[in-house]
Length: 504
Image (tube, rainbow, N blue to C red):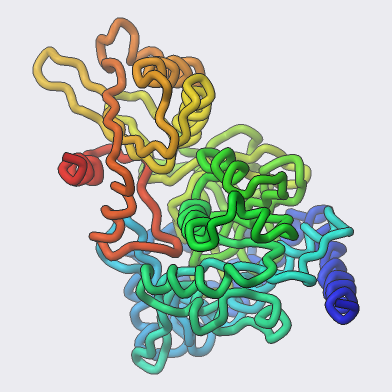
């Protein structure tokens, strides 16, 4: 026990030192970002991409905007594929050995995101240390390294291909973790890297139920599945009975708002919740205060940030701003230039700045995940806020959901159609629908206008999902575990129609 306490003290001291460097980019954000941009342009000027766009002649941010195009994955794909086949100096110097395979529920086609040695060490790995450093500085009496950290990564293995490797980002990270992290982590590396989700879930449960867990890390939806399985296997009343030293859940990937109350109930005591914002393309934000879920934008990870106001996103020549010109409260699509060889890359996420001193953000959704079939501009943040009110009013708890438009036919108005899977059903479904609809009107004036007298939009159409409907839908698509998630909103019926068919 004394050895554990000493280890906890030493690692805590070491990990907390990083806070001075974090404070430095907080104090000098614009200078930090400019330094990253020009360092990376210089670093990559002799690559194929650098020569194509004249990196060596770029001397200002305006030059950068004029000469280098904003790109989607599809436009970047030929360069990525060439690097994946073992070619050097394509969009980043040298050979890229790892590619994170990202295959969200929205695309059948997988994406392969380059993970250079620099992005692995100075972005992803650095961020993991910073996440713990920020927490340790906020909670100096923490016991993180006295107990095990439970990680829940993706369900894929690393596959060698063209003398390079590709796999889930979490598999790449686990494969490269330092020894001192590995010895404080559960489940074992072997189990963590298992591919088939159901077998993996059983193996994880078997290992972790006998551990003394102090922290957990993962996507809320999949972590909830695991904790429910652990409770079932151990016959305890709550997770805190099994793991009395559990003190924090580091979560990301999806909004935590619909899950907060469920975690409070299943854990059975108050713990800390810290949100992180990461993706295969990079690690972007970390919650830096225990009393707010806003995230500090991490500015020294080799990522240069730009932002497109969402009200101009679909323009042929939208306004694009650097960090220097962002405004609080405005919804932006995020554009990144990374030390993995992505240049002015549209990641597909939307964010809002809650503060510019320091730069803090909240994720508001995806550039493709919204409902705007009738000019209502419904975003995921609107929906989650309205659902929270409806659940509060009716005692309901929601596990998963999706929504889509019902298009107008003739003189008949349109509507929004929803499938909700409840872990706790509302005491009155009609009251739930009315409360949901009412709050959407309150927070979204465009929605309110379209709902006026049912002229454009009728009352929401709501279906109750069978138990585990969304789980089985993801299973049928081969997308269980890891970063896979249910698309909450869609401007067409690509997701809701097959789900309704399965729900019959």
